[in-house]
Image (cartoon, rainbow, N blue to C red; front, side, top):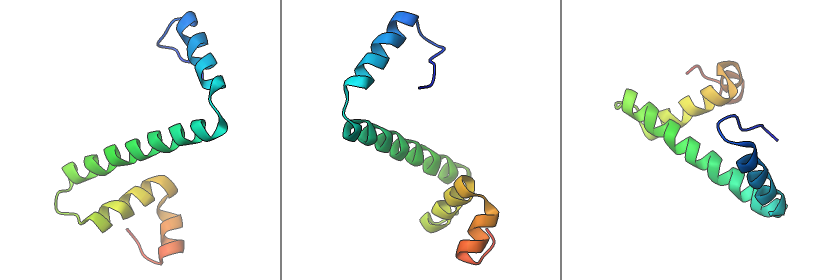
Length: 80
């Protein structure tokens, strides 16, 4: 588990205890929610910097950022 550096030891221990009480399904759902939230933020940031891009182009840019241009070329057969 990552060590929190912006909080007290007492708060960290409480946080860890709360996470340990969650089921694997609950922890997976938390991870999914965090991932989707971050994806929405990244999508909005790309949209803000590049308002001319279509949604499909933004999703492709997100894929490039996550997997790299070489993988996108191999999988999608095109440059970004």
